[in-house]
View 1 (cartoon, rainbow over the protein chains, first blue to last red):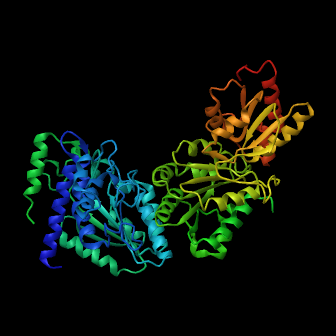
View 2 (tube, rainbow over the protein chains, first blue to last red):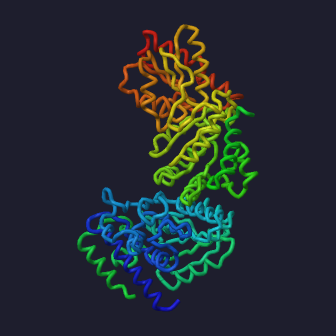
View 3 (cartoon, rainbow over the protein chains, first blue to last red):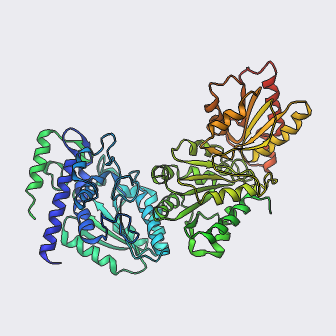
Amino acid sequence: MDSDKIKKLKRKAKIIREGILECIGVNKKGHLGGSMSSADLVAALYFYKMRINPDNPNDPDRDRFIFSKGHSVLAQYAALAEMGFFPKSELKYTKELGSILQGHPEIRTPGVEANTGSLGQGLSIGVGMALAAKLDQKNYRIYVIVGDGELCEGQIWEAVTCANFYKLDNLVAIVDKNRFQASGSIKERYDIGNVKARFDVCGWKTWEIDGHNMNEIVDSLDQVELVKESPCAIIANTIKGKGVSFAENNFNFHNNSLTKEQYEQARKDIASIVV
Amino acid sequence: MDNNLREAYGRELLEIARQDERVVALDADLCGSTMTKYLQEEIPERFFEMGIAEANMVSVAAGLALSGKIPFVNSFSVFAAGQPYNQIRQGIALPNLNVRIVGSSCGLSDAGDGATHQSIEDIAIMRAIPNMTIVEPVDAEETRKIIRASLQHQGPMYIRINRSSLPLLTNKQTPFKIGKMNLVADGSDIVIFASGFMVHQALKAHDILEKDGLTIRVINVNTIKPLNKDEVLKYSKNVKAIVTAEEHSIIGGLGSAISEVLCESKIPMKKVGIKDQFGQSAGSHEELIEYYNLTPQAIVVKVKDLISKNAFIFE
């Protein structure tokens, strides 16, 4: 892919990070860490790969995106606002009473495809959409971002098995592997072992990439389209809180509030990202 | 087999699937018992074997519904409503999706398998979830009508199906509408609100009590949620006593739902149901019905208690 296009995607990722901050605001709680770690993945999906159109949001042929790690939805809200699904002015009302932007994804929000947030369910919902696509002989694709902490949920592996059994080559799982769960480092807290190997052994085609390297993200999203009769998993190694200096690799910002000073620092950090 | 509810369900599911391409079925390795096997045999591409993985099955159904399908999710009641509670709550009820959760072998009707396979709290669990509609057919004919009506219904449904064959109480002409009760027998002294299998028991109690000179109204509450409050009030008006009868725990089921409507009523009321305890294995459904006091005689005793001066002694 030419460097101009990559630059454009990096700019979109930067806009998403700004949007995440807008959602969190000052002295309000918000899931900063996991939203920031997935921002580049979300940018590539919405602004490069997925066929969706805010002017025709119910197009039956559109690609679908499910944020199974629903708490990171702030990245999705920022992307949807940037695409024009709703005004950017809505972002600052995230999680307020009556807002269209709930704490976790709900289909009442324009552009959101499924209700998630109770971890472990989104990949199964994606399996259902993928089965429907096959039944209707449609060629849309379903992209599901799951968290590495979320992979402890048994239902994820029910869905992994099911997708392989039904040969769902229209289903792509992207693991936002930021190596932290809410209470600390996965390695220290609850480690399920080699994630890629687990998908491999279940019959999935897998890639392991740097989840902040736009070239690698775009390449992997292109490559999964060549696979026939197997579901695909992209294991994206990411940094929790990526882009915000004091929040990187710091589980205290999994879901926390920002002081005025922290908020300003975070804005500065994101503004300084070179694209 | 005309009187078997599961059989009627399986055949009608196939029938509506023939007519409506949106209909799909998912089963967790029980298609021979839930009777989704008929759909599988004729339209295999719209039958999904989900393995013994109910949580995934329910969320997959959510994905299918979000893609315009009308999925029927099948297992025994205890596994269909109990195992994937949170998947039903978050993935289906919250977004108000057109998923039909079909709980087969409900109540004590899977007699031999014992407490693990019997469902006595499924209605309580499903009833507490906003947006959920709960129906329980009284016979094979009403089962067919419910399945047909479900095509037009917006939002999730929990359909509770008895394993036992039951006598036909309704026919093709009997009106059926989700959210509307059916008057099965009329009388003015006592009203019995019953659902499913217990409607049959209430009718037997009706026959016994009428011999004693009481006139008994029996109501088939086929839609447990949303409960038709106007009808509860209408059918309770001017009676001497109210009895509810359900093959379910007395906590959270039909009796609780009726009580919630009538909590300010001065008319004495009692519940027939399973008293906050688990079931167990037995040679037959009938044995369990006897053991857990879900007999016509149990209803008769409650009615007589209520109209005697002991009415207000708390059990």
